[in-house]
Amino acid sequence: MLYYQSVKAMDKEQYLRVLEKKHTLYFDVFRDRRVGDQLFDIVAEFHARTERHLLTMVMDAYEAHEYRMIKCYDRFSLEEAERFAQWLVGEVRRRARPNEEHMCTIVTGAAISENPIEEGVKQFVKKFKHVKYHAFGLRGWQEVRLLAVDLSTGSVAANGRGRQVIDDFKISEAAVCSGNISKREVE
Image (cartoon, rainbow, N blue to C red):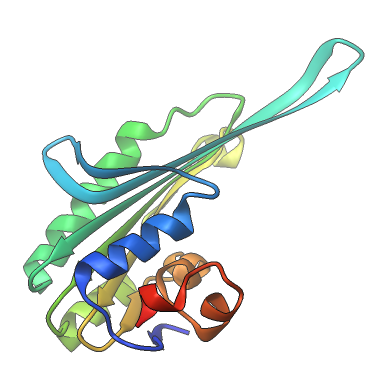
């Protein structure tokens, strides 16, 4: 599903609080953080290392790193989308450290617009792709997920890889009913 209509459109601060709460369980979440030359409303980081042991010796290990950069825009234009996507590509290249233990480095960029997003921007987001395999995948890979959230309508557009995490950026009745998000935060 490329576009998702949420339960109800909400304002920026309310949506950021919901996103922060959703990400806190698995990610280290930081508000109003500068990364390079960009200021983000939310930056979330996840790092995992898995090892297999034989007695006391480590047989093999792998590491996975995921970064989510969430930024609000008054109006998310095509020029902003292109600039944001290129910045994310540079960021994933900077953060990926391919070695024998590297499995993946993923950077997810979510642009939140308070005004309607044009159809051309949604098409750009949908078609954007960046995946790079290191040493034919033996030293892992890097990828960029790109999402555009329209707060005026509540819709979410995502690229191919971004569809894997689109549920993290939408508010559903199930999330409200399960108690993960209070009804007050959604209304």
